[in-house]
Length: 182
Image: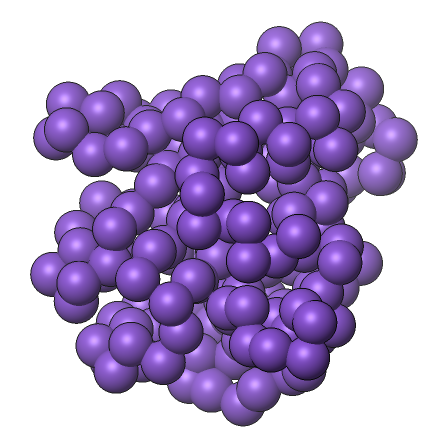
């Protein structure tokens, strides 16, 4: 079983990368907790994505603030061989460590993006997020990547300036479990 979690500053491209990774899959919305989409590829279950795809603040950010306990209980059942997640809601060391205790191999993908790129993307999408909150989220994502790396976990850093399809190809090459989505 493999859990792949995308993290990075708001505007770094997490949702866009997730869309690129799952572009070949049909989605079936499943109830929760936690709300998730079953990913179907070639008429077979390829995995699940935590949260919901939506225009703004998708992925795990579409889950309620108290989603972590339900998500961990769900992981304990091991319903899916491949679980994907992205966003701030579950992007923390406690969630990733608990996933490992549930038997998941975890890969944290950190999207590194320059401040100029972040500002440009946020302006393009008309972001009205509080700048202090955005800076805190950026720091939290960076600190998570550093902590996971220090703990010996699998951490992949991607250049957020790459096109989503390029990042998806790099990830699929580095994480064979993602081939189920192709």
